[in-house]
Length: 120
Image 1 (tube, rainbow, N blue to C red):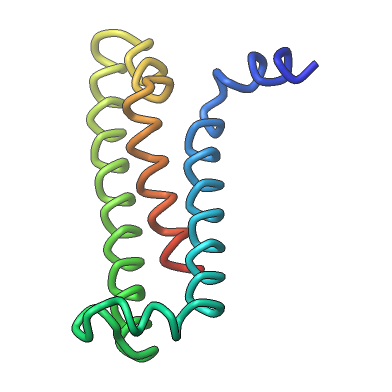
Image 2: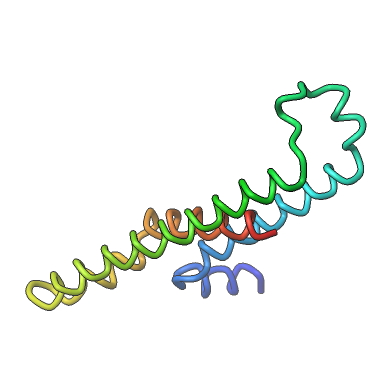
């Protein structure tokens, strides 16, 4: 049953970026748990320059979040404009091949995962 479900949805566009996003969600939850429960023990082990305050961490994560969102929007919109023009003049399958390419979906997954991690 599960194997049939995985095979059905594995070829969907949102499957691989969704997995990366779930991984980022799990990683963010783990980091939050470690930070809240073991922060006093980590302060003894880690050097002082690694430990930051809450305002600095919020500023860094907000900057990363904005950068990832901008990078994702510019990268994929530019590529899709080029591929749309190319597909209208040469082959209509190029856009579909680009969207279902595994490397493209991994890059989109990394961008989405990074954004979700920064938000959380």
